[in-house]
Image (tube, rainbow, N blue to C red; front, top):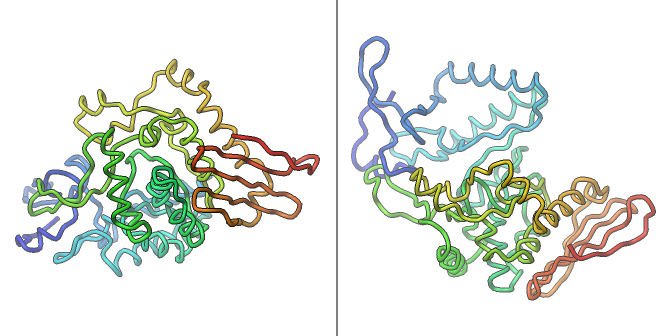
Length: 365
């Protein structure tokens, strides 16, 4: 439950919707109060100051561990921290105390933790340093900049310093997130990416203030499929996917991304949820047809290489290349796999050892 919050403190709260993050309720004993509902009025936030919350989470983690779960994603964990006078989002040191409890409790049951947060990239590094899996949400805007400007310098700078215990993405159900690339890509380049993608996307998701839910804040997410973001250019899309597959970390491929999905304006207008533009409901026939497309099969070939080639169990190497290309690979004893991406021609060339014969082979993806 929540007490009174003054207008100044209300203005500091970070929210995700055009409503206050509270709901007036009547409790079982007949008393009235307000509770937090960060995402929807049917989803009440858990109180991480209450012992009952940790007991429930312990039971849940135990249940999952007993059924073989090895990696647990903590969705939107930044909203676990509630303190008057703050943004109530990623409040330190509270957020690290809560995460450490999750990490330790999960580790005791053979599970690793992957917290999900969209904010300044320093949080991903802090998560990785604490022995958890981070999300590489900076990668999509960096790739879009590289493909649009034909310049890989900022992308390669990130590849040199990014955590290796990370999960990489091109697209997610949330679209393309912007705060995660702050201070990695200069602001004027970020604005150029936003302008370019906005020409063919829905309205972006904005940061808002709880004091005025209709206020216009900084752009938080671009509502667009990644395939549309690269103007439905198969070669540009495969070049981006190749870089993702060879970057440090575990590649995650969103279903709309695998199927090279287009923006679903009809679904977005029907539901009123801007992010639904990137959440098309595929029929079986649609999915089968999309999986058989050339662009899906090219992705599948990359995914198969990433999943089966022994080089990826070794060490990552970022090789020298000019600013209009990217050259990187993996080496594990006699096994090696290299990708060379030419941004000018949107080509991705793989050179790798044959796992059986050891001979070197090369091919365009």
